[in-house]
Amino acid sequence: MYKTVDDSRIQISQLMLPSHSNFSGKIHGGYILNLMDQIAFACASKHSGAYCVTASVDTVDFINPIEVGELVTMKSSVNYVGKTSMVIGIRVEAENIQTGKIKHCNSSYFTMVAKANDGRPKTVPGLILNDKTEVKRFLKALKRIETKLHRQEEFDHSNFPLENYLDKLKDYRVTIDLPEDTK
Image 1 (cartoon, rainbow, N blue to C red):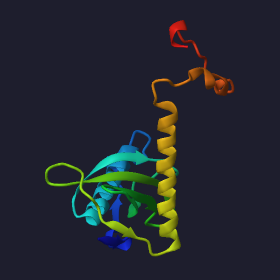
Image 2 (image 1 turned 135 degrees about the vertical axis):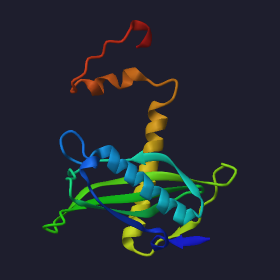
Image 3 (image 1 turned 90 degrees about the vertical axis):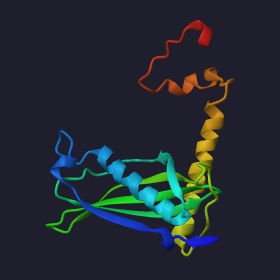
């Protein structure tokens, strides 16, 4: 079975209240992440027809602060599907409801895994890509997955050759002071 990206798109809007703010008067990033996780769950569950859990979150850059009184809109879509996982792309915008000015606040990618009733991963429907943007998003998700796997292969093995990398750190604000037996 295959579904289009449009079949699972979700959009939510919420007015930002003083209770959502941090000590500097801006909306707390943790609150926004919580909303993003909720919309990622809804989008992934809608696509898969199953309960979904968050496996990872990639690239959360807070580009612009969100003010109390702004209307935050989050738009989500399935950007990639694997066998049991989906990458949900989320765009966060904030609108000053008095002026109508809209600003992009962040974009992020949540990897969600569909679960069967017994708790094991469940196969998700394939994805029908209907336009160039959807194809590009799928390809970008593939690239992020490949990059992550390459980074894990390079750094996460037991015979990591630390000495091959120390020279790369010379231009950074770091001092290496390792015991002799760990070099």
